[in-house]
Amino acid sequence: MNKITCICLGVRDMTRSIQFYRDGLGYKTDCTEANPMVCFFDTPGTKFELYPLTQLAQDINPDNPPALNPGFTGFTLAYNVAEKEEVDQIIDLVRQAGGTIIKEPQPVFWGGYHAYFSDPDGYTWEVAWGANFQYDEQGLLKF
Image (cartoon, rainbow, N blue to C red):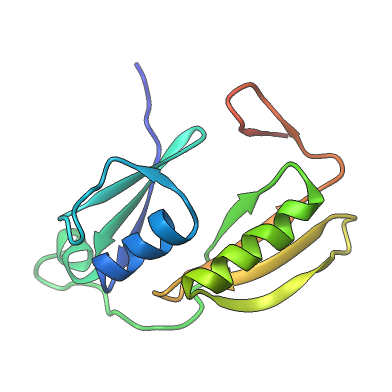
């Protein structure tokens, strides 16, 4: 049985989020509409999905949807890169696309180089490079 993994982000404004990921960061998608019901982006090994936040909360529990509280939830997404310089390049793209830089690119205690940003809905991303990072033929990080 094939298993498909998808990371779903509930977003407040589909148009703004699609512009950020597709037009700003260059994620590949078949979405051509400005405000579709759902939008999937291609990433190595998984799909990345945007879904309206209020509808996602209703889908989880229509009778008692989870509260839509802003703030850090302890959840981050990782954008791993093969070359150290790509960390700076991605942060420049994020800045141009309207994201918020939380931590500028810098060396990290484990010997890599990283930065943090948040997207228009406040989701936290780490952009990371490691000298020992290895990728398989599909571009997935190997551990």
